[in-house]
Image 1 (cartoon, rainbow, N blue to C red):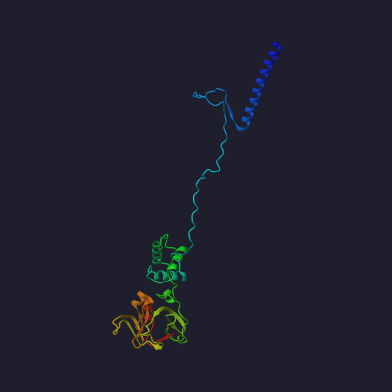
Image 2: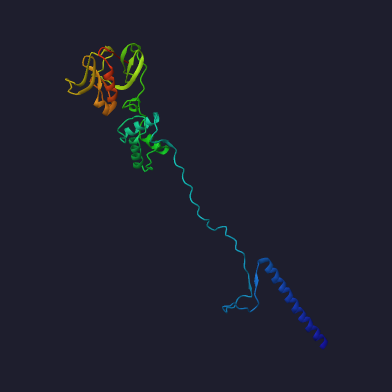
Length: 288
């Protein structure tokens, strides 16, 4: 009986040691797998608080649902610029004509993008909530197109600058004031060579400028019309009371107005030089 008891006791103790070994092995595996930290049973921290026998520390993995850092929004590319100050050409002339239609520009069109055109573009842009750059980009141009109509020829050349028509055959010899109603221009020609060209304006349908071949019969530098009491500087008379002369109204309003039959010139410097060059007896040709 005692022998059996000792044997059973040893066996029981053996079982107990075996269980302990197995438990310890399990903990070791858990530590290896999870990176746990094993503390002795009943161990207290430095603050005196009782802690769990086993503390498992799981490595931190960033959450897939975490809010990503906010990246700066890409800048919206600016619209391409079509024209800016210093440019010139037919596109600028059309721009100026359209700005005139809606009263943002009162000079020109000249075909040259100057400071007045830049100021007009800035005003148009600011009124419509666009950046006031003074440059015409595609966005500004589309807005302007939607508010205006396509300008006609004499809107584009309201203040002159149009190309001259080919000279009439009767202008090809001698000293000639060659005047075209088609292109509204005057060529000063000597023996078929053009020395200067300028824009001109004619009479209305009620007081038309006569057509044909004439001669300059009188020059009057500071002439004033006795019929209309209006100044006619640099007057070169060629048919009755009709003359080529400088016109303040043409200089101010362009082709919006008309003469009483005379050939008006708006460029004072050009007509002054012409007046000095032309002689009494020189030929005048007025044609379509």
